[in-house]
Image (cartoon, rainbow, N blue to C red):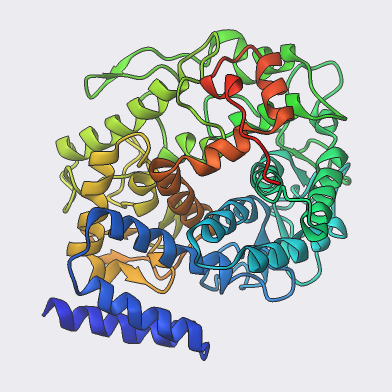
Length: 454
């Protein structure tokens, strides 16, 4: 019966991927791999590789940018590209080049096309919007008042682009051209444009028509630490350290220090909040030994992931399936739309990305989850772009979607657990090292830079 379910899933996946011979071959291999027993290492490789297809084969055909999601919704179709998700996709392309799933030349060509497109796309003082149309580069408003720059999504984009700049470091002309274009885009971002006059903080959105009408301060603890790090690291439009301490850390109010599920949580909301808080910024930032006056960020990331697994084991609301091998709450699709999931805000929806992108923090617990999602639930969850976005066993629901912001962290964070390669590349940026020092961080990575390739 299990093999039959797997074959049916493979046939459904064939309908999803269309006429691409490569895609069909990949689906056939997926069905074979899922029906057999894989070693832990082979299973991690399969999870990364299959998920990578989202950013390679399903990318926008004109720009190469990452599409927001795989399914069509009432609000928009597949033509909407995501700036933050594209940054995650850039890091995934670097992983794919290193792993040999694509050639270095193929990766370079795709990134050349993407950055050339971004150079002519809508920007606001160098800041990109949350969404844009993948074929034209014009803004697709995220909401009525959010039709301009989104500084947090822009930060995720440059987390990826700076990683790629460090990776493509050879003297060959195509790699020099890519580095120069990334540097030009990076230097154009005016991070200070997202400060209100006289206020020591950054603001998430700024619209040419509505200014700061969205009124969203970028203040911690949440997923946006990378925004302040990049803003402090800018070679042209940097914020000062006071903006970080007052705006992001809220003069120390960012701290928590209480125990949840018997585990002390250094920062953030009670229970930790959605798991992506510890993923998006730390795809590039290496939390191991990263400290400032507020926290040890390695401890923060590990504590949050451990709390989530322990919460699933306790399962206070009695949802079906929850346990040591089925855990992970973060924002994702849910029956009827999209929602926030976390301890204290739990409706039975599990998101594979939450546990799988936590591999560097909880390798054993994340492997338990990967095994369960693949070996036990693979017939329902495993498809052409890896694991479905989310599922709810209590209601018997599985998402018919994949989202860039959930798929990207799976690839990058499993790779960081296996090799640390994305961490090393991003942390080798001289501007990032200077910015971290400026903000008062310490890290072993600041004393062990990676040499650029020649």
